[in-house]
Length: 388
Image 1 (cartoon, helix red, strand yellow):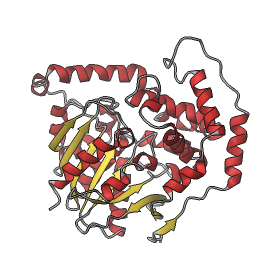
Image 2 (cartoon, rainbow, N blue to C red; image 1 turned 60 degrees about the vertical axis):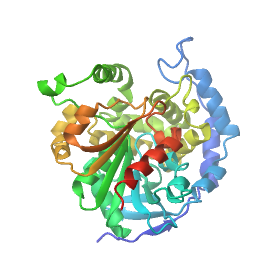
Image 3 (cartoon, rainbow, N blue to C red; image 1 turned 45 degrees about the vertical axis):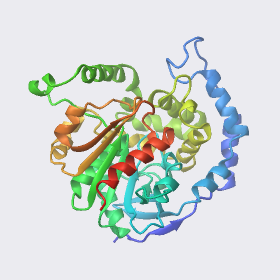
Image 4 (cartoon, one colour; image 1 turned 180 degrees about the vertical axis):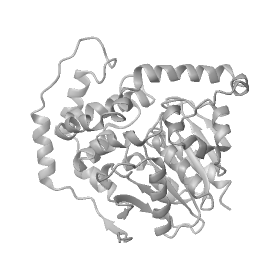
C-alpha cells in the first residue's frame, strides 16, 4: 500500500548539477536565423543569446533557491505519483484554505509575489492558508511514471491532498491548465470546494443557434481572435499533444533549447510588446526554466498535453463538457487582455455557476506573476463573499 505520509522538503540542488548547466551554456551551438523577422518564427537570436549570457554569468540560482525555501515545502505520494507542494498557513484564525494550481509552462514560482499578501494581508482583507502544488510531472514533483494524468486525475489527487492536510472546506484557484483542474476539483467535491476562481479560462460554443444570437460584437471579436491562436500560436500544444517524446530529447539535453521553447510561449501569452521580460522579471522566468531543467521534467510536462482537453473536440471525446454542465460551485472569473483565448461570458455561464466576472485592462495568462496586485485583489474579493 502506498504511503500517505507527508514529508518535509527543502530545495538543495547539488553543485555538480549547476556546474553541468554552466558547461552546457558555455558550449551552446547556436542556430542561424533570417534577419529582420523579430519574434515571428520564435525567439530572435540576439535576444536569446543575451538572455543566455545573463543566465550563465549573472543569474543567481542559490538566491532563488533561498527564496523558495522561505516557504514550507512538502512531498507526498498520491495515486502512484510524487507530489511536491508549498503549504503556507496564515496566522489569521479566519483564514480559508485555498489550493492554487499553475499551468504550462509555469511552476510554483509564478505565485511567489502573492503568497505573503494572501496569507498575511494588511487590515481586514480575507486571508488564506495556501496549498501550492507542483503539477504531477512538473518541476519538483518529478516526472510521472504512467500516462493518464489528465485534469480529472489531478483533481482527484488534489482532493486527496487537501484531505490529508485536514481541510474539509476550501477554495480552488487555477490559471491556464489549472482552470480545468480546479473546475474538475469543484465538480468532484462540491461539498468541500466552497468556491472556484479561475484566470485564463477557455470557453466553447455549443453550436446552439439561440446561444449564438445572444452574442455581442465584442464576443464575436473574441471568437475571431481564436482563429489566430489556431493558425499561429497552437504549434506548441500541437507538438506536445501528439509527439511529446520526440520533443523530450532536445528539451532534456539542451538548456538553451528549453529556454527558447519556454520564452517563445511567454512572449505570446503575456502582456508585453517586445519581450516577455516586460511582463515577468527575467530572474523569475529563469527560475521556472531551472525548475524544469534541474528536475528533467520538460518532457514529462510535455506528455501532459496528451491528456489535456484544450479544445472542444477533445473535450467532448473525454466527456469533460458533460461533466462541466453539472458544475454548481460558485465560480469567479478574472479576464486579462493577453489570456491565451479570451473567454466569452455567455459560453461560460452555460457550463458554470458564474457569480463574479471581472475584466482587467492589463495582464496575461500568468496573472499571479504579471499582475500580482490585481490577482490578489480579485481572489480576496471573490472568496470574501463566500467564506463566512
